[in-house]
Length: 127
Image (cartoon, rainbow, N blue to C red; front, side):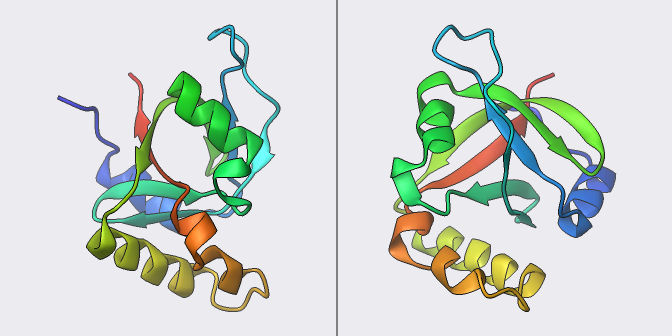
């Protein structure tokens, strides 16, 4: 069974805006350069989207390696990355979470478009 974030962690994550993602490099051991990224919580899970869609280097590394670490809410976590695709109901829920959390940002509209939606990643604790 997949590990789960705690209710307290999810609450903290839903309010935090300091996420950096570092998938492993191709050696599977070395963490990639931290990339600042938006994160949202919905359906009791943590999700991110790649602003530049599936061409984003961090997204490609996350999908190839499937693991790495994140920095969120002032903490570092070892994580697994799981691609999310062809899930219209979940995509709408994630988009709604982005609209709520980042409503005042000029960068919000692109995050709701096909490219980033097609590069949605579920982040699971690896502990």
